[in-house]
Amino acid sequence: MNQEFRDKAKAAARFLSDHKGENTVLLDVSEVSGWTDFFIITTVRSAGHMKGLMRELSGFFSEQQIPVHRGNKGNADEGWELIDCGDMVIHLMSDEFRKFYDLEHLWFTGKKVAYSSS
Image (cartoon, rainbow, N blue to C red):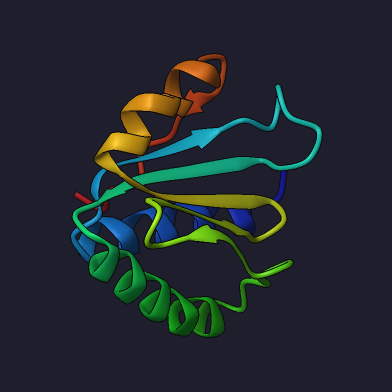
């Protein structure tokens, strides 16, 4: 796995946390997934918060030179947006969707990665 992209995944998790994404988790799924290396999962407070995060992420991706493959999947009004960045997949989820789908449990063999600079 590319250390530069690992650092970008950590930066993306920090970015989401800094922009009020709640309970942000960075999972290294590289050993259990053949199609991506990282999942970033965060809870959003509302559809407006999700849309705002997506706008802010667009600038972040540009600055960090992170490619977005296929754009967003989902509907912010429905409670789950998936952003496919190839080696990193970002899940912006309402609390209800996050509890229902429980991705951390589904991908329990993935390793949590610390991303905080503190």
